[in-house]
Image (cartoon, rainbow, N blue to C red; front, side, top):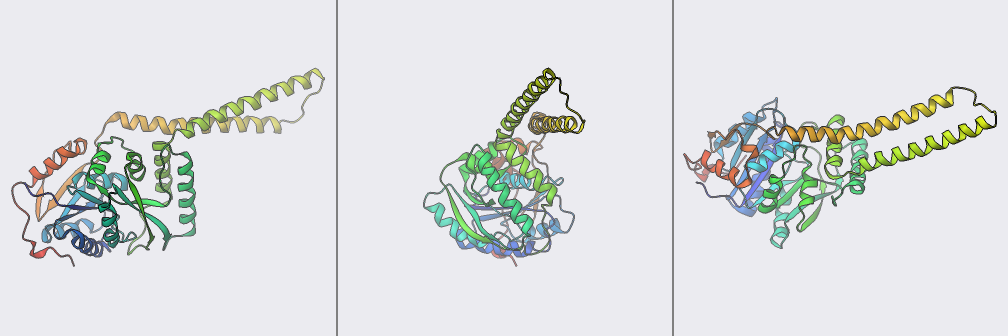
Length: 351
């Protein structure tokens, strides 16, 4: 059994071949500054269609600290992050994207804050370089709406970029939901969570992996995971609609007593359309929550790992790895690589 590292860096990757080596170089340099060689760099290939996995395989063969995880298909950023966290063994775990928008060097500022007792140190963006006005405006609107709707306090202008203690990661992995919103789940866990303000850089290479459709789905996952307020809004809309309908009924009855009729069908159609729209909105809100309950009840594996590499060695994990407890996952990883010790440290530097 290999000794557990003091630090794990987890980076989900999807079509990141252009900038992956530079990310690994900078992340490894930052990790060595705070942990020496007692770290691991976990790169999760989330169903990439370019040469991302070939680069990960090459790094894993040359550098003993690199752990390559290849998912069977594209699961999305949140589940790929969860797969990487599941494979981590460090007492402290840094979750970061591989596109270099979040500087790995901030680890050197996060570690002293954690040494002073923080359970989580999360990056809070003060400026976002290289993003369109629409992305900035929609992100601002989303975080402010979420802060009002969510049942827990979720810091504004934050992503998944954060350093966590092992106990926080283990609690996070024990949470069974499939539609995951990691930054909200970490906030729900509680403990001492400290913000580290920073300026977010533009992407080093490549394009964003979050088009409008994925952004909307992500927002829906966030709101439905941490708020039942939309269901109450549906109830309020129904009550308001019922009140308006009653008022219209009384108005119609009074006009009938006065032998006056309302001419034209436009007003009638407008009223019918308005009430129908409200009903459909309410049904849609209920459907969002019901659909998530159906997905949870199926109990399918959260993610599926095709290949895992460390030190040039390939290992197989149990089929039910994603459903294991955090402790059992670490034991399964140690058992999978028990046949050989990591290679010599002479090639431990990247790039």
